[in-house]
Image (tube, rainbow, N blue to C red):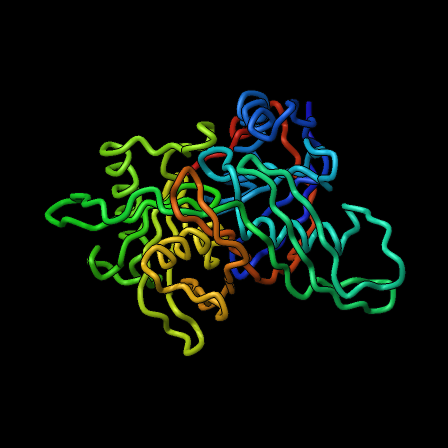
Length: 339
């Protein structure tokens, strides 16, 4: 038996995304967390097939549109990576919105040719609203930028001392749709550049696992959101208009080439707790490849008596290809592999 899976690929500020548009069963569940659990049980072999080699690679990311779980939602989204299924992804929202509107996957009746379109997504982390800024070229639509209003972001614990090797590294644990360990790259003793990616991968995973040994990290309102998703290394920006440079190591030592959307929201939560985040100025976050996301605070609130923000993150994505993948049941590598 040969399984056919169709996808449209894009990248958001450098980070690849493979949106599966046909060939996967529709996940079951009344909530997005239930749909995620169903996908983990029934679709994981296909996730490996389309994310890992020989069809993908270690740093490939994926998404699957589902039926919404709310009355006014346009779609649900499940996200996948080299290790499993995540709860939220900022660059994924930007890329999926670009693909969905430029390829007409999510249809809404708008009169004329609107300059902006608003979409409401249900994710395992909660409701995420996206606003796409459009350019019309005849009947074709180009999505210039996408700004999404994230779920509330907050600091779970500041300045936790983590020992890795001979170093004691201060770590801020923050939530931006997933939980991150946020560290200063200089304190960790590693620069943020391509040459040091092997060390960044190793150290990022070591820090995340050490944090989980020291703390049980669980969302105070939704216990289905738990565990450290990744480590964010921050450093002074290279670009004159950026505030910080970062790289995120997540899942199983996967490298985020973009500035990381949910990670940007988590970093903003840390800056907010430090009194360094201004309402009237955007926060510009630079990636390891020199691209940027812009973030701004749209709401200040509390999550279980913790100061929190709702951040709006803006960036751009570009479609890179359309593919049909064949998965032969007799292929010994049908479920992918990693080296």
